[in-house]
Image (cartoon, rainbow over all chains, first blue to last red; front, side, top):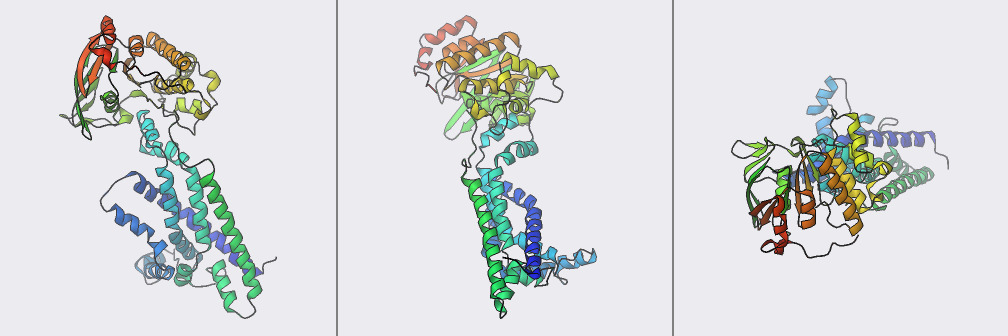
Length: 230
Length: 236
């Protein structure tokens, strides 16, 4: 099964957009997941609900909100344009859309992973002189590694398959914003595009399967709960 | 010198404890649920008293009147928890080094490893250790923190007879060789007799008596005999 040049470009772009999107959202997702797992604050349910919005809203709505905020006439878009960092109708915009759509999955997976770490181990680390950052990086994060990898795999798969928000926000520009799902949609809508659509469908299924397999292996192998060794 | 004066509420249970002891090794002795572990956790900074004062060897760790409440990381205490709490993802070596201050002499690590006979275990993960070995690593980790005081919460609980004897022997060795203020929580008289110089008997969150030296024999006689556990140590 050989892909055409246009299909290969769309596939490579999807990988680039997903990788950059998920990588950039990771620090924010870690911060939000830690806040949800380890702190109590006023308005926490509202905060949690806001984080999950991209999972619930129609993707077109999310894409339109991104367009309003980051488009050439949007408040953030104008600032980015002035700084020469325009993202509207560029692959970086597609990466932002992918990051926003995958963000809730990453937060949920990380939150569960952090909550599975026995807090007694963090308390033990505190009595050994460790401050909050050291406790997080030396104890909590390493013990959450399986959940982190599972979350990354699921978020990558979600970003890879992102369609609605991307086409609404950055349209379909070959080599810039025409990711694999958008290319697939165009092939389906074009007479004679069936074989190309089938090839891209197969690729999409394989990527999703590999991601699910990684997530399942991480979450199931050896369990996810880390308790103090006694 | 250990000075405790604290009021601590945990649900419906209220701990109101006030004691001063100049013993280098003090045992908190009493029934399960009498408040001895809560006292130890309050000293470690993991529970927050409603009011009171906690001072060890002149260092004030908590003083509600002066709004002093040092975080656990700054109390400079070595804590050996009943459930050991070794970090499962780290080797024995890395567990031991976790709390070592940068200023600690290089020989301190080797000394602790030798004292607790841990040399052959350094590369193992906690899951690969026996119950007695886990306790020895936990003790070594607390010691390498270079603490101003050592807090031991039932260090021999849930160990089978051989492991219990092994860990007790090492704790006796530490008592002999290190001049370290120690607070021990226990409900086992033999443990208290071997490791403590004074014993505070706690009953329902209050100090019932404070004994020193030869008065330990009182633990086996009325009225304190009732505090002594008659349950056999569970085998592991």
